[in-house]
Length: 148
Image 1 (tube, rainbow, N blue to C red):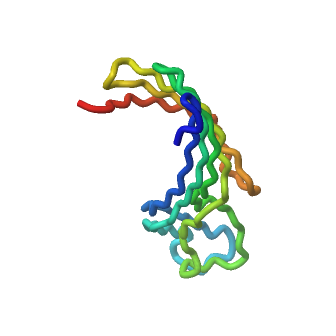
Image 2 (cartoon, helix red, strand yellow):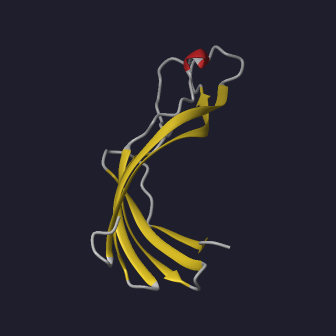
Image 3 (cartoon, rainbow, N blue to C red):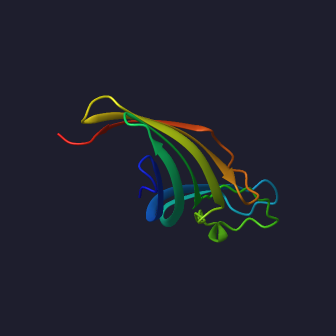
């Protein structure tokens, strides 16, 4: 909502369920009793993703500038381990709900006409827990058709 004629604040709480494929490969390297020393398993799992966001912006008529922060989890199945015993029945490619990230971003929306605007945004995911999923910054572009 607007807090003045030009300034606005927004917030959201989002929940989704993602179908995430995962695969795991295990290799026996010593004292192998199985005929096949490599074991592979794959599956698709439903993983919940939760995001809470806050956004502030300014409306300059044909141009709107905004920035915000989001917190969300990042599903993951990335892990590497070394086991003493090779047990194919014990291997599971389970996807975890993942670490929590802070995402800081800024953006601009420019009206091309009364019905169409162009949006650009830049955001950077920042892990809040120790994790090896490091990436970004991310650039997004969108064409928004308001009404036809």
